[in-house]
Figure (tube, rainbow, N blue to C red):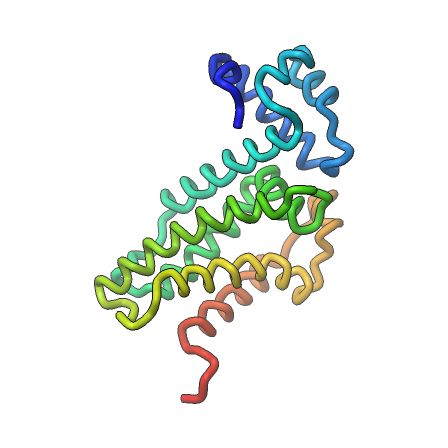
Length: 217
């Protein structure tokens, strides 16, 4: 977490530091990224950096927190179907909105998802803990409301269902590239076009499986 000294900076200066840090972490491995390069790009003294952050890990985790907040805001402000019209249509749209966020915010996608899954982040468990905790709290609230209005059965446990949806949703980020033959490392380095139709179909299949179950009718 940044020090109060960082927050005493003008918003414009804070934003420059954030943007230059994002560019470095999104385009290079964690090990390669250097504070020296970041301060050079941001045009601040190296000594000043350590008045703002404890070090590189502290800075990265601050970017994670910013990314989580941006994604949450993106989801909350998206034009999603009303839960009153069905929990599963809402969930389907929510997952596709999460994909839209990743496509529209490639640097944060790299910071939140690709680097921890495919990169050399030494504290990946902490990144996963932060992203997962927020996601579980968000979807649990929607599940509880859906139970309250009769869109989901009262016998289900919101904590367990939220955990299941978020955990399996996170695993989809690794499954989809394998399933659709997407070369993630190439995607990271190049502006590779994605088959959005195929990805959305996979998300549809995932939600349908949750809705219908895997037992025999």
